[in-house]
Length: 315
Ligand code: AMP
Image 1: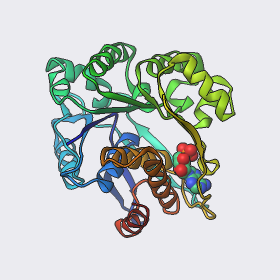
Image 2 (image 1 turned 120 degrees about the vertical axis):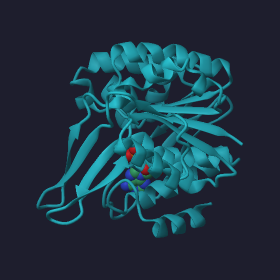
Image 3 (image 1 turned 180 degrees about the horizontal axis):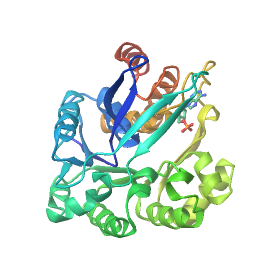
């Protein structure tokens, strides 16, 4: 059975339940990837591990419980002896526009690789993962010292035959608007990964390139053997590996409600379909159908009923 490891930060999410009450949940870009992966794939088909960090406290216990409920493996949810999990609050203004306040600058997640290293990295390597997924948000929250630990770890995983998937998910604010710094770190990630999953917008912001073919050429310059999947919302995507290259159209959604988790649900669904043995086109079409459903609902995690309907129609 394939083992997939998804690495990044999951946070406590506080969102309004009523005018006066907030409800607590757990969320984050990679958490959404793992969640949609496990919504698509049965337990006996795929094991998904969320590699993240939380405190040795009640919120940490609740995260582990939540992962169990979501059928996500918690073995790599590492417990920090002093720090706790990061937090964000969802604000909604009078027009329904959402904004987010974050408390994550000293979160446990920033030291995930230090915690792993204290265990000799074997907790990860011994799993012999088939897939290791991380994002540009994962990169952004790590310190320079921590990122320096990531690169050799990726090389070790690659040497073990693991596929490394990277979605740059570029957020200027997380890099203090330091584009040169972000570009430098992303270039390292592009070179060490086997599959690159950027949006065309990421490539435009990073390299000033806004066309599929030119974007693919730029990425291949950095990593000539990479598999590429460049996504551009309703304008479809470009896929390229060593044997084929093609454009795939998607059916544009007429009424988009909230694009939160479009890319994350796409990535998780794509990973699930591939791990379940679907071919590339089937997997891309499945992922596009799920992402199209997700953006017709509010928030990252859509209710199960419309999800199941979309999954059953697309699988
Ligand atoms: P993005 O990260 O915006 O490129 O979105 C990820 C995926 O979500 C895309 O590859 C599409 O499959 C899907 N998607 C995003 N926006 C739309 C849309 N307006 N209509 C249909 N599908 C969409």
